[in-house]
Image 1 (tube, rainbow, N blue to C red):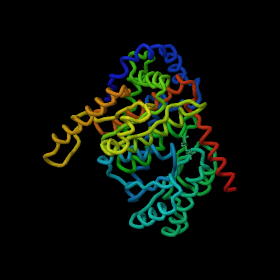
Image 2: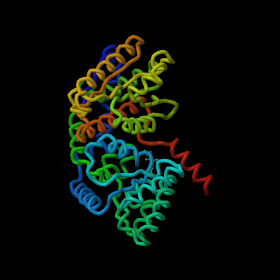
Image 3: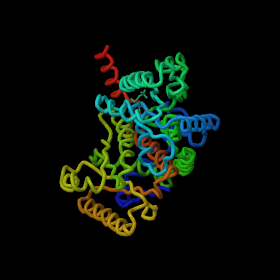
Image 4: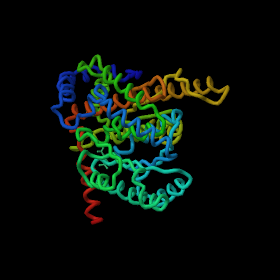
Length: 405
Ligand code: PA5
């Protein structure tokens, strides 16, 4: 389902093997519950069927009653849903999703309200803490909008996904009678896309979330092995650490299909927020080809060699629709571009790996999400940082709250 190509891994195999024992211990910690915030690790193998059935039933209700669902949230409460929604564009057959609260642009939100005028609207507000200012502001704005359109009793149009039994949002939801989906306290925002955070809005958009979970379960089975030699996910984690030791402090995730680019934003958060602490961590960035080959390509070729590249591509027989008569030509050009990138990176000694997925569908996406979550957590543990906290983000949040108070 996901193939890791190993050209630049082979010469580093000995250095990577020095992590093998650490990997065995970290794997155990991830799976045995001794590490906090690891609720996502065994999630694909223990899907709560009652909870899933409830999500599916409510998503059907949303699809039947409304035409638009505004997803209000930021960071881990937004990026995963957005990435899946963009990537699975071809599978959508439900309500249209709109996104609010991920920026503080007044014009953005004004235009959003104008777009909503043509729709029958419901809201899905997502915040684990229930206190994030960007989310709260957008929710206030949208509540006012809803009142203007539907009168004061619009509570049946509001769905809330928030931390279990705590926080301001939870209290408000209980008071107003909004439908609440509680979040597992042991799963942090950036590891939460396979919970109600992603599943509810995506199912409302008509995306097959059961297939998403099936893909994650397949990854869980394939990657539940503490032997680095047998586990490509842990090979990738060790490889990243070896490169970090070589001074490669930036990772470029590169994509060819524009639908996949939002997945790059999800990856950036996952790795930056998990790994960037104690003055350590590899800075994640995302590139979209061919566009970026004609803009930052010069830096990649001749600039400061502080980076390595992880190219995420689709298998050539993935069955992508292209304008009639051009399928073969597009395939040939894409292959030539990938070969050219490989050639120039190899000539410069820039490490590059390729991760190829079989198809752009929900099952493959679920697999890829789990692969990267686990690779990221393992990479952090090998680097000696806590993958599951975000003290820097919390510092920004509380300072902003202080200023506004
Ligand atoms: O991954 C994380 O923990 C963060 O990015 C949060 O998801 C983000 O800050 C939003 O927080 P909350 O869900 O509490 O509104």
